[in-house]
Length: 140
Image (cartoon, rainbow, N blue to C red; front, side, top):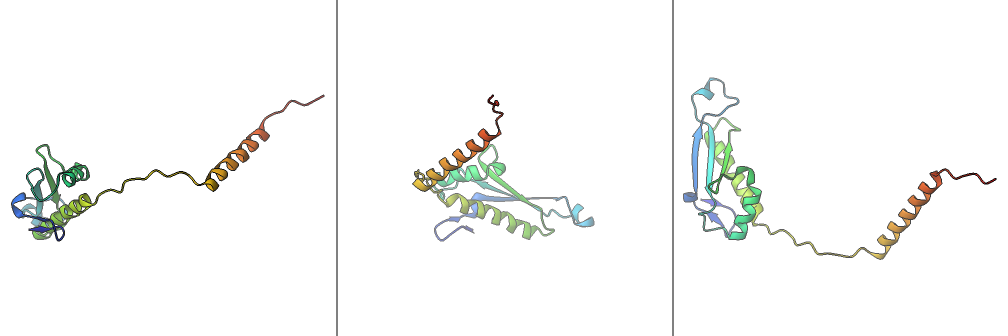
């Protein structure tokens, strides 16, 4: 089980792990041991997430999203298969936690009177500065 918070628990039936030989450090061991771990999470079939959370998760996990609606997260950061597996689970848990947070709705506000005055004063000052740069014909 992957525990996200006290209300949401992802069952292992929605997760599948595959291993492969990883590139990177490991010396001769890298050619013998499957230390890279790939985690597939079946987002469409998971009943514990709401539709809005799934929609936000699709946006957040767009780089990891496959055509069939699954999320593919891989890790080959360490030489240990077990540690890479934990890293994949942590990445997925963080994505799901971010997807559960509802974005704040922006409330339209009016600018304050003082900010309006400051803006108009700075515009007038800038206009005067530019007007002073112009070549004015000499009066004879």
